[in-house]
Image (cartoon, rainbow, N blue to C red; front, side):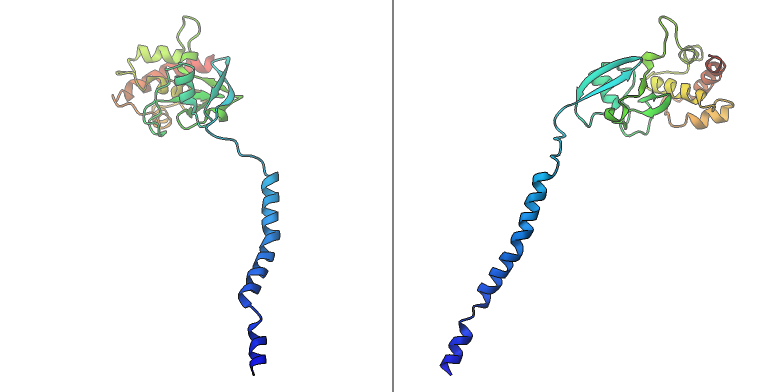
Length: 203
């Protein structure tokens, strides 16, 4: 009876299970280590990256944080402060610029995403000493008061005309609705777009 009892207790179940688990885990661990060794190393987002932006007809090479927006690149790095930072959430339109002739909210667009494309800001509209027709129309129609939203309004208005949405006051109001004027100069803005549209389309 005692022999049977000793033979039963000589088998250590805990030791067996520990050994089995260890042998099972070893190849899995080895595979994970091998995968880590060959995986690409993630770039540190805190390190600056090199980017070339084509702004108002000129290439501008910058070393910036990868998370920098077009708006911050323009204002903080290139000192082009015409584009305004209003809400910084893409809701007011004060930061509107043209990228490849499309109106874009520069506060929501990464500078890296705009590389290789033509960025036009309010500073790039005038030719020498001659105002762009839309700029002149805003002056003629007193289409601004405080002026803070005006650069974004003008850039959006230029695109509105080129998109073919300036055929009626209703269209102008609809397609300019993304640009907020807290001074409520909307009737004068509509008048300015109507005045400039024929000359822009002609040119």
